[in-house]
Length: 140
View (cartoon, helix red, strand yellow):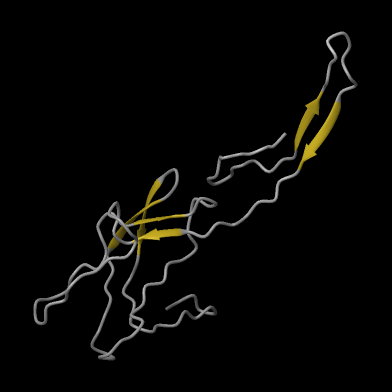
């Protein structure tokens, strides 16, 4: 006998122990009822991030043309969700290899993020390359 539970989203599966009963019979009399107690060990799944929305893969590519102004570097259908929580604690957006320090910027307007099972809107603010989060002041 094997048990499985395929429900995985915020609050599920319910981790209350399950009590499973067993009765065997020879056709004339039943055995004494016995029980198996099933305990749950919940896991914290990583949040999922897909920058290109419904297209194959999860990364996004764009070409910046000099002197033509800002370009979008994620699909408008960007998807971010966590099957364990209805909210995400934070998002980090960073230029990993700035080559023109002080001249390269990320400006983020409103981003729509898909969560499971609801949808919500998260607003980001302007973040400079290599900005460090200050845990004492709660600022970037």
